[in-house]
Image (cartoon, rainbow, N blue to C red):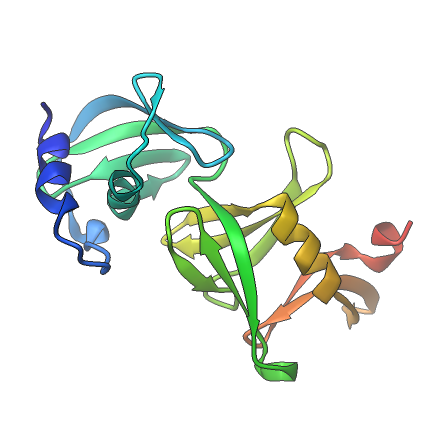
Length: 189
């Protein structure tokens, strides 16, 4: 059993919802562990889905991104894992407030809540599977959640057209920021 697994076992029952300070931990890279986060947000260990939601949540709290690589990090161990797309999926969205004070709050598949805004931008990129646009929201420290298709439809219902740099853009507003899906002429085409 690796130190990472012992650490997970020790913390699993703790019930603390705060995030550990993984950005302050700098252990040596210990290699890779056969954990894969699939595009749909399912976590696998050695080819088998991890069925314990609390364990997945725990692992998600010690996840760190460095460039294009993802690691599970403890104070004494750093193990690289595989992430097929984004490590999280935004499975729910709620709107809080109205007008300029409106916030769009996303809930991820591992229970994180994040309000889109200047510190947690929504970015639209080409979806590798469909070729269409796919929104992603930053959750923390470079870790993103791909917005689930059903939540994307909710975003589209809230979208509006605004003039940005002399062009009409179609997008959504949250926490004082506007996130464009793209030029209105392309979206409505």
